[in-house]
Picture 1 (cartoon, rainbow, N blue to C red):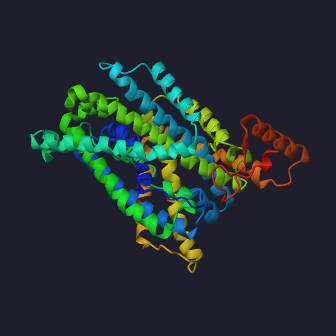
Picture 2: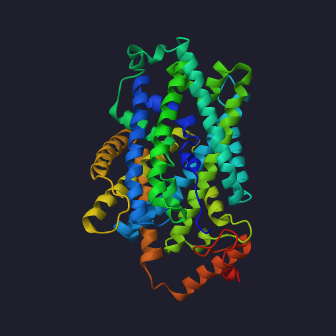
Picture 3: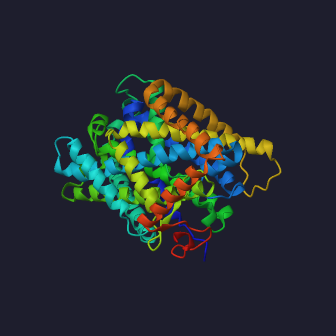
Length: 470
């Protein structure tokens, strides 16, 4: 069938490498174990609320491309283009960079048990991971592998949780007792707590994954809410209990000092079997790359279809159906991101900009209710939910800006740099004929070089319209 069925395991793509990276950032910024666990739980609740708002938007505006499509339809071309611009320039490259650095950290940690792995080696290994991914043989193969990776990842996390329960039964819960749990490692600071939420929300990224492929979902009215109600509580449970398990085996100071939390955890409790952890995290990061690749190619396609991106970026290989130009573009921008080798700065960066647009999109839901009250809404949620989300959103952005002004302002500057690009590239319609023919020649050259064609809507993978290749 032309529609494809996406399994609930794919919705569990939320569980990426984040849970193996973020515990350190969340604990460091929230200043105590108790508050860190509250941050993890609250982030799960907020994720569920935003997922419900997105579910309503997803079936009211049933287009692939996620929040880009919603923002463009509600607030107009410029707002939609800025969302796309930020996703293409910052969000996807940063996500890939974080995943690559996580993979490198976990792969090298066993080789450098007593110190941090050398940064040069990290960068190189990260680059190797990216190049392996660029040569990703086929999207279809990758999608089949996805379920295996997700299952392996969930098994690793459940192993961590079970070991945590065993630890608690043996009486190792010093840091979970209320008087110790809220003992501050450093003075509490509202700005840093906001950053802890950004670090936590990075681990939940992927909750809007299905909104990017709404057109390809079978019966989205039933399957979208069902996926949310099953996956978000499950993921929140797994994250909170994984963090409780970490704290039963190591002190907060040890957790903050560790560059690869799950490896340290495995070394403390698994002994001879501690190799399981780095392997499961490596699998997890590969699964994460695959999910990110999947949504980014859909976003590139949606953008090119609306005329907001060069058509070349949405083209796919004639035989393998992999979006090679988009992958190469993301790879180059990711390698630039890897110049900042600090994972936690990268997460703050992407967290702030992502949250900015989540808020704009959810505000769009309220605007749409006012502007078009009678439009058909197969899923309709109470307006209280978007309002609660927006209050939390305002708190998070204001205090993040106060706490990390440079990182947040750079993000805003990159976003606003899209305005002149939009005015020149899209708003100015009557460009000189010479310019248009130059762009057409470049596109044609790219097509020949990468053997790619523009996929026709509704065509099956592998049966794309090959007329344009001529």
